[in-house]
Image (tube, rainbow, N blue to C red; front, side, top):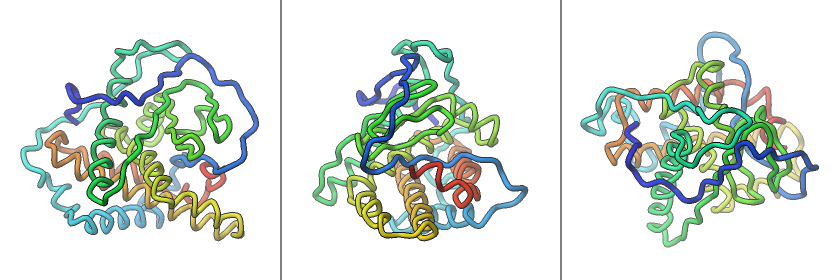
Length: 273
């Protein structure tokens, strides 16, 4: 992913090394995060297939040919694809110039540009989310969370929360490496922000109060799949700018498979709290 030298968002709050403490969750909608868990063996699970199908038809709905993207149809894709490592040190403050923050800020800026354009075309105004970098634990309007919770979006304060050590886990535990896999994680959480702005999350949280556990879990899966679809929409428009490299789309699809495997069914309580 050719991200260096591009615009960086001003909406990144760096709270690494500050420590968040723990408090009881406040009322209101819970946080939504990428599910984390082990793989269940070889091959693709049903939920993985559904993710890929939703990505495919979600892109087709926008007039995008996913097969052409995967084949490098964006034109002039150079070989490459790196892995961004957070070298700021765990438990310590990170300088504003560290590469991980620059990468996250650049990806967030790309999502801002993409969704601002889409909203504007529909006569709407896109409100940028904040992205909070943290280490260890963090407080949010949805309560407190530790790094073990993984990245999440809190509708209550319209912020994405990310401990960048998750990217190491993404690589080492799930085998989903590459900078575009990391960008996919951010785009997925921003997808939840889009759902919030368009009323999907408020409606879901309202309906969830009248649902049984099984039905609520089923609807939560649909919410996650739609966030994956929105991440795919962002990937398409990013590809049109010529900043994707050969193998980037495969990195994103692999990340969707690894962290969206059948943990969607097994760990529902983890990301809708």
